[in-house]
Image (spheres, protein in one colour):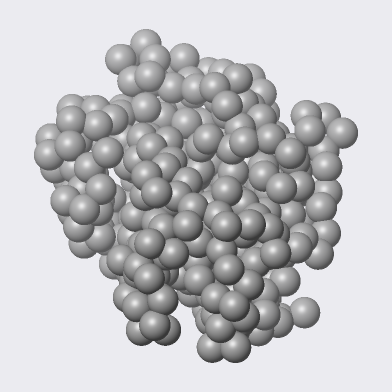
Length: 341
Ligand code: SF4
């Protein structure tokens, strides 16, 4: 089936006109889709004949029904497993923060970036998700949790900049005032460092937040954790980040997973300060979430606190991320890639 949620409003208008229907029907259908209806039946002001026509032409509303929902006893975080029509599966995580409800969505089924600490890459890349499949993760979670979600982080399985065209379309669709109308500033995209795309992203979406998975203070350590660093080494990445902040005047978040005896020493903290000097940024320290297959261990609390203090003492704002959903493997780097089951 083709997914109506893969269409921007102008494309939906063109579709309706091609089907011999008035253009204004597109706006009605578009609005219903992003109100989170669970099918054509709930579109009460759309004629039945038109709904039938769309179905006969092979169009669906692209609704996901979770195959599995795990709810954290610790903090109410919900991890969803969605089965896609082609047999792939993906995961999304719904989290409650003080500033609002947030969904962490996947942008690909699997990932080919090979980061050593990450469960999502263990089986490689299966395929890119479509714009509608990204949007539906939010809508399905809202239907299940019964509460509105006002922040999206594209930080689940996949490298969003490896699926840039669909990512861009998804952002435009979810931001459209005729539909979900989610503010650009309420969206964060996280990349492992595909440098050429950072410049493109700054031009296309200067208001969307950018996070960089940095995880290391130098090339040796980063090479050993993240293969992407061999193609785009740290100095090239940091230069692109500097340019990004100059062009957009927006602060970048650097994600830094603290791994015991790997990147969590005092020396590492000082190295990181040198690298980030002059970049408008914030560092999000993430004590590693253990994934058995990776053989890496979590930094001790004391080491995390000491690392944070050194950064702050040198003028770099840092936080230690409060991990949500640890008891359901919903935390960063713990999402499986849900390949073919
Ligand atoms: S951390 Fe992100 S980019 Fe790296 S392998 Fe995992 S999903 Fe892919």
